[in-house]
Image 1: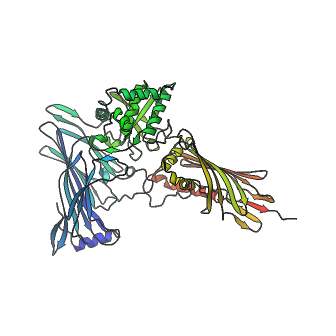
Image 2: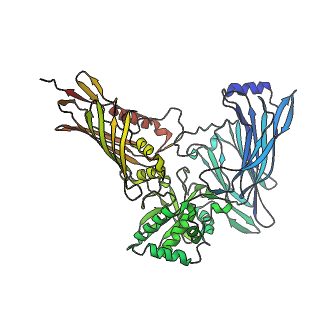
Image 3: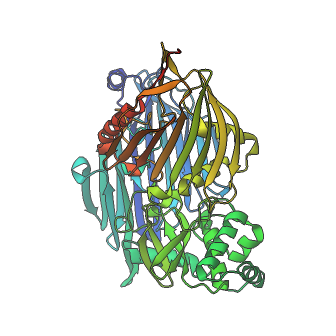
Length: 629
């Protein structure tokens, strides 16, 4: 329905309510209508209404373009778009100037049928309304969308309606909001029940840097069809993990049914020198990592169904499901049991299978090798992760592991911080009021995988990356030379031997020199701003260790060494140890992140922990020059 009562008084009140905002959404609604057709199939359509208003031409600016996302599984049935302007007390409608379809451009997706239908609105000025109405059709009743009660734009109200006959049973779950904060109404007319959820003045969600994902804090709702009845027959859909797995199993039950002799012969030759099943799986996994290029597909059911292993082997590229397909099939040829397809959601999705037994819980697929009671997660989409470690973005998530017609659920562990260490050992000399040093940098586990992934095969940027990784002290740091060790072997630490100089760092006063030995200060700028509202993701647990050895110049002595200290709480731990032996001063210090996801209620503790850490970063040693006789 078009709201025509807005006048100058309403415009003025909105300008006062939202200072600095140029455009607000005055009304947004989605209405799902579920029915059963004569072929006893579910029919699901969604009527959408979006109404926004330009309240000023200053401030953040407004958009003349709106769009609808659609695909082969989520089709547009009809649409209407226009501008409304108040002319002499009446609403004048202006049709959109241009409508176009374009591919949704996402660099991470190689092939996708997801598109945008864009609308260029005309005759826009202060007080104008943009109205977009459209109807969508869901081809698959298992793939319904979540509803957000908050977005990044200002909304006056957001409404979700679900209408369904008595032969259909639905269920829903609210996240980050309870029923008391929503207007919820249920009514039944002529056998059709409609449940309405409405949120007035929803909060605006600000995107914070390095956030775990919007779903951790944003209020939203997932709903699903549990079952429906036709002629006394009950058809299960969703609502339990058993039902979800039954749906998933249809995607893998018919692939890799025929033995491919070429892939089998290659596999047997690849693993011919392996003595154990674990060696076989490791060899297969490493080959897939190195030789199958990861590309993402999101075209229709191609986004859910793995391709035949033989095709993946022939093409030498594939998405996460394709990599799982070839790993499981090669393991079969190698006669290794219990290497299975596994569904999992990445860390941006904060759900458990018990909370959300629906496809929205998963956006990734890997393989899992079960050896006695040990589970090894095989995610070849990460070409640099060592065998035996999960990729960082699935740590702490539940995995749904196929076991034929049954399944098991396991929790992917977080890799311990002592396996993801960074160790930097430097030896320093003071020459002509300048620091001259040499060092050895070692990264292990997921830290090494991260660096190798960032660097990739970009030889031209190698020194730039090494400089950024090794820079210390101040902006006068000069990397003289460096040598990488075992960069291409992800089973070993990534190491760098290097030489450097650091000028304008020492502080001299009379015959005393003040030197801060903490040339590296991890996390010192990572305090959370008071405005931050989203969970922070460290990606993986990590321990950064540093050893600094200073050669005291001849004719000098150390007159002050800071005290050693230790600190530990749930989020952070550190220790600093100063000592002197003959003509050398030693500082050993390490900083350990003990929790990957830092929630808003923990921000104050994190900031207080960093404050204490930074006090130690300010400590200096004092070196005094002896008077000459």
